[in-house]
Length: 152
Image (spheres, rainbow, N blue to C red):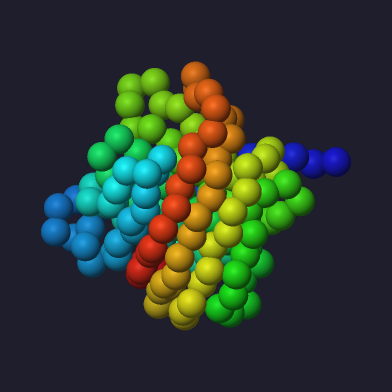
């Protein structure tokens, strides 16, 4: 049985988009959510990519980065995160010693709904419970009310 490292896959897919700073970030889209009940937005940057049948996007804001990879995608729909599912969500602290919580094959759960997906971008909503999966992370982190609008 082959184990795929989803955070590495998300990073690989999203990194193909390049990165930008300042006003250019808003041109790539926006991501927002509530992390353990606290409002969060991707004001430091957004990256997104569509490769074959996978849609991946990530956003960085105060204290956290959220990365999501969805697949296989053939059009709009709802995709699950968790054990036995092919989509993944990752929450990482943006500190010197990052901590990571994941909803993927390792555990956790949730979903992402792509309301719109085209060759130019995607929009939708997401929520997930991430289990500690890296660094000195402990317990779970709950991400709710997630919204995104990204350009590839």
